[in-house]
Image 1 (cartoon, rainbow, N blue to C red):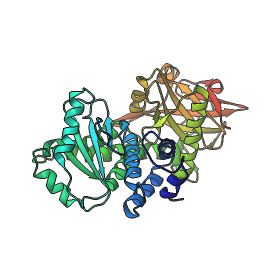
Image 2: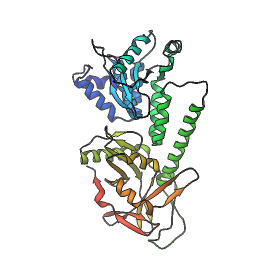
Image 3: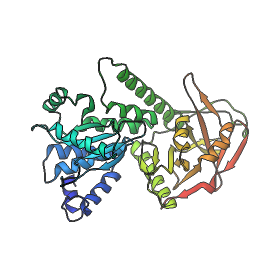
Image 4: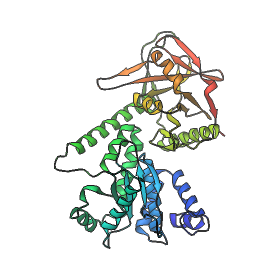
Length: 393
């Protein structure tokens, strides 16, 4: 179904503030992948239907959530005595953004009214004093609005981005899996003085570097056609072996990750939301998980799984009350949710890859009968992690 049809069968089909239709629509948008979210957004922009602007507003807010913002959804329709806005996006260390979603800029926007809303929110301490306004436009024909903002006294407190560019930002954020990438992307949505472009160059350069690290990790840990096995003191010492494996599709990996997240949600009675491709947290950040994937590889002592653990992933888990490093295995209907405290206790036993500008730890799991063990070739030890297993339905 297209998004118009889905809205029609949600609740009573009438999209109103605080309605069952609105609640069901927003829940749907949280569950679908970003490609489907992009499809819905494009439909709203190209095929006008009843309340398509309100649907686009919810889609844009969901995109903001996937960029790591805590999102306060605004009203669909203004009400007497209430401050009108389409959304408020908040993130520690970033400027709070008041969101205004426009399908097109065919008509003139009253900038003074929108910034009056911002001022009233600041006066009521609903937002910080340095908050900015972000206009999100559905179509590329935004020249009129750009000129209007540029020539106004609000130019240094306003930013404009298309829905398409917002989608690209979310995909970059999800594809790298790096927290710093999200932080850099968020800076692009804040008003920036352009006379000197060093800040923009840094964002582009560091984001590309993050993507390279992520690709490197994936290839070394899981998908590389030639996986090199390091000598294992638990076995007869041997030189490097080369094992040929077929690649696993990204959609299959995504489905397995979702199964892990669903299983953990059921186990702990929580609702984890995606912050990047492999990082998830609850709304209050009490629970955080990092989901790593590996397929099965043959070895001299049976079969095993390879993973990489980055310092940035550890940093992400460190401030959660309950942080878990989750190992997903391609051919098992279970995952292993390892508490961060346990991971920290074995870090000094793990092999590392050390490069000039970064390093990461290697995780080596092995099948032993009905159990899975975490092996530490560096020190010649192993320990069962079966107690951390969470089965799928």
